[in-house]
Length: 71
Image: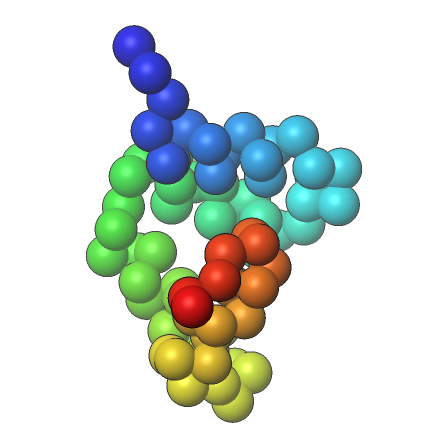
């Protein structure tokens, strides 16, 4: 069975030593592992609010982070 986006994200986070002892990363891993879309959206919205970002700015930042261009 092929990997889906959840598996890719979970593996990226699990294999990154910067996340190993990070409680927020553990919360994200649990959300991804449970495939809990609602909790993921709530967490993303909280992150945006905490950082004073619009949804659009957050999407643009994530696209840059992961090397995607929207051109």
